[in-house]
Image 1: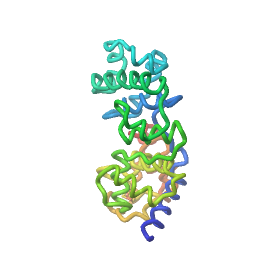
Image 2 (image 1 turned 135 degrees about the horizontal axis):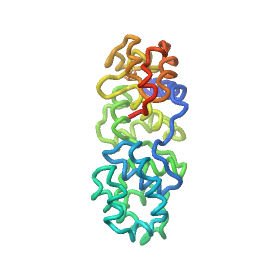
Image 3 (image 1 turned 180 degrees about the vertical axis):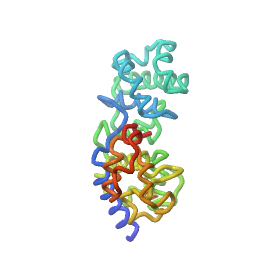
Image 4 (image 1 turned 30 degrees about the horizontal axis):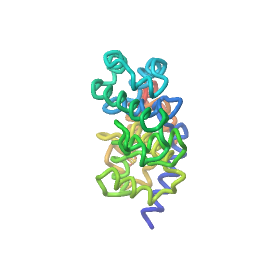
Length: 249
Ligand code: SF4
């Protein structure tokens, strides 16, 4: 019970800390989100967002991916890395959607995970953001943070998903995922978390993993870095101009 109460208090603090939390992969529909999520493997969302406008214009439907010229598709997605494997995934995804789902992305986890290139994490991103079906996205940030916060000591992503699902109300799962990932990218970094400038400090069992003095504000990232410092009761001017101007990683 204590764990659930603390998790929910932390989730509320995250809601106040990151009012701008959202899916950072630009997309207009479920197919675009599926494609962007495949491209985001081992690549930043920012890089994916640079590539997708041209890609989405060239391949508007699943049938377009199914019939894609491999060399042309490879060239378009090359900046996202692992482009040969990703090209194979996109063509296979297009073919599977055309053959089995009339070219539409299905809105059920059990169907989504049968599609090429779509694992459970991707399926939850699609469900939560394109179908409004609550889903918990266990990516590397989410794993690191919920373990730091002692919400769970599981290491397997599916077990983490279930453990966190038992602590947080289902209707909040999708936004919680965005907020945790936002916090991981902007505040609670893997190597040097900004504990001294973190709104969760009083609730966090891992407080002290990073520097605890106000100069930790230097570690905050993203366009709202100064707001994040102020929300944590730290002088926003301690955030260097370049940190506030930079995109979150
Ligand atoms: S107090 Fe430190 S470890 Fe805890 S959430 Fe904040 S930055 Fe992360």
